[in-house]
Image (cartoon, rainbow, N blue to C red):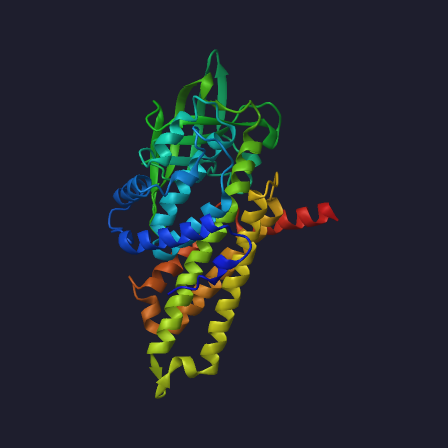
Length: 382
């Protein structure tokens, strides 16, 4: 059984502990799914998660509005990731893809949320471009005003759920000011005329990813989310909520790696005795356990701080995301080492974790960028 003692920490309420218990039982019954057809697997996961109510926390409930509960998002991502990385992906993108609508959408735009929360529509967040990843201010895609419409032209890439999404939140340059201040956000239906899949992208841990082309995609003015020029603020506000959850997913991967390693060293004999009796092995297990607990403290501090009403948690979320993802990489690498040849055998759980963790150190703000963010926050507060 995985360590659940962290749920007794004061960051959580009884409802979070109950959620963790019920979701664990659901995951044991329903995960993992067959990943052979990744598009079909994602659709199946979104449908399952929605039907059983697990997607409700990902977006605003328009019938009972309130802030998103980041601790719930983090517990859910950690638990799903420990069982199935693709399930975590499916859950996370329902939240990230609709975050702008939850935080800034009009009532008309928020009509999508009942569908995404029920698993009846798949969402996507389209920010990155071929020449604009971490440097959002370098966005080149344009949205030109034409009467009562906006016309979008350009490309987006590395878009999660690209090709299977029913709606995209897209960021484009409207030109109110240079750089980041001249961006706006738009709600784009997946079947919009002129929106195409330029390329499907294959990565080491298969997920539905695509490069999207926008060939004069005409949208009504009502597709604008917030005000013209608010795009950068909207994107950063969404990431402020969901960046901590990336750390939570990494934490789930790391916990699974630690659990598998503890079982391995207890069962595997080396030089006539269980591996667990070797002091070098004990040292590895101790380091892994320390990194997992330290990451959990940072992740749930950031989530708790946001839930307590902090306007921004840029520093806390960046620390959580950076530390949890980097340390999960180290924990999983140790797990591979402790498993020997099995650790690099295709299809083994730790081999799968090794592939799953790498992207988390890049997306939603690469580790190097998080260091810049943290440094600026610390020096600016000094």
